Length: 151
Image 1 (cartoon, rainbow, N blue to C red):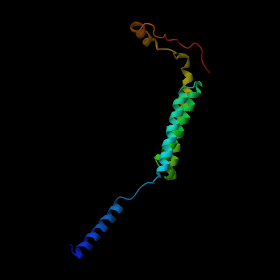
Image 2: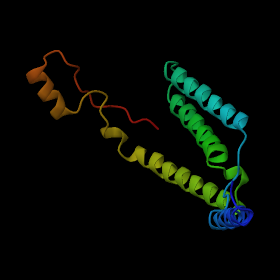
Image 3: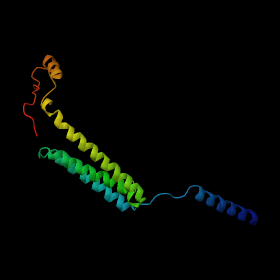
Image 4: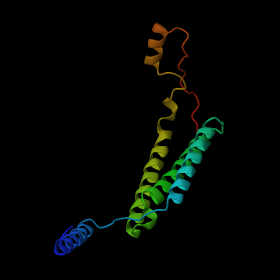
């Protein structure tokens, strides 16, 4: 049997130790319910399946825009729920939106630049690669230079 003064000393030491740990390591962030995390994960899986399915549907150059649109939605879900942006400070949302707009602007400049070299694009293999294929793999597809310039 332990002495009463020892028990009170041990419990006061444990209280002091627990209090100092709580102050030294505060709970940071937001606890998200599991149902929200599971729903977000399921939405990401569904969007991934849609992205793969769209790859097999030929809608021309619109395939790229659909894939980018789905990727933006998926990135928004990840940032909002998995990275806790929904419950974070408004400044962090502003930084996220600003960075996203910068990426869109950069992609827009890259797309604008493609018309400069469209006339020199090849529909098949590059000429040097085609020479190598002809030497080592007869019957490989022939590289053909685009003759028309697309607007």
